[in-house]
Image (tube, rainbow, N blue to C red; front, side, top):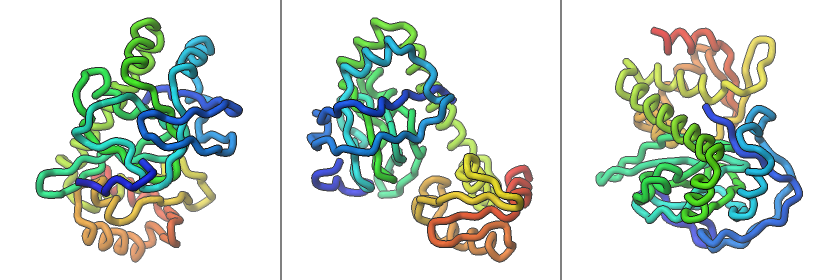
Length: 261
């Protein structure tokens, strides 16, 4: 399986954060809520999708909890107890084969709903969700969530759009791994995707790379050694610079050329 459970941790609009709300402990995790600064990573665009009336109704059935890096939210094969909406931070969604090989299917960001497919179908969680960066999640119990989307058609469409985006993302992962001609192409595509929202300078793009080489390998379907070697080649070619967790794209056009080849 993926990382063991750590003791005491556990192209659609996203849901907004209410800055000064009283937080409730999540019954799904058994972890006491931790006070956090009233900040959010969500953009103005991501605040759209549900009316204030629907948001107020949703607030009554959700439970806000903060999780540290490495916490396991749920594991592949466990009964789907509810939906988790990412408010802040990053979450890895991964699957593991019987041989122990791990593939990261997605890095969930604020606004993403985790476990949505399993909660709707009534099947066990089909992935493992592990905290990549300290995160704030809103847990909505399955029965409450199903009743909510049954009573509110606009909310149902909202979450359906999130589910559709997840399907498109899964197709993109399969396409990237199955049709890419080389690991260099996959690494280049990963770097471009990861830095797509980073601040652009005159001749470079600088972002924080929060993933290890092993995690990048699991995300693109390659070995850690191959990823390390490819990144070293990109550095020699002065396409990128890596300073600790800081990634600088010096030659974005060169990476784009690899992906388009």
